[in-house]
Image (cartoon, rainbow, N blue to C red):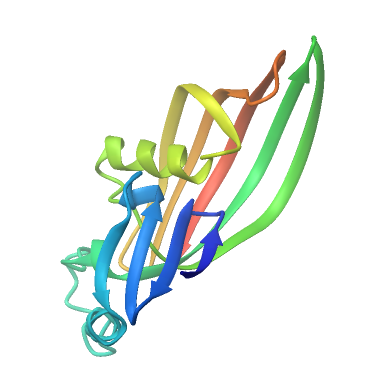
Amino acid sequence: YVYRFYPQTGIYLAFADNNVFLLGGAFGDAIVDAGSISSVMSTLEARETPTDSGSSGDGNSGGSSLELWDLTISGNVTTTTLGIGNTIAFQGLVANDVPAPDLSNTEEVNQEIISSLDGIASGISNISITVVTNTDSQRTFNVSFSASALAPGVSISYELTYDYRR
């Protein structure tokens, strides 16, 4: 295998014997054979958004879950170790060409949050989501939640903005 890991999504993309394989994130814990490189490329090219489809006006792009977006995650993360807190503000963790969750589906949004933190934090709880924008070209939501760090005695609270744009 020749592979690359995408930490923003928790997905491994691998190539072997002219096939594409996926593991992690939305693809789960078992290796998924996505098919030949040429068939995967054809599928991805077919999913590109046509330039003339944008303004029919209903606010629903129909099939938007198959289209790829650019994601920026920003916000504050507070780490508390043995009662001492430290807040870090950050701007612009960026992942390009990722699917955006359906903001009307709370479970899908929760899965997006959990998969984006895979390997960083566990025990995610107290999730609160507020949708800011939900249009054909932008999906933005604010989220706050608590988590347990992978180190003992460390807790983390997050106040993040997930901003998907096309």
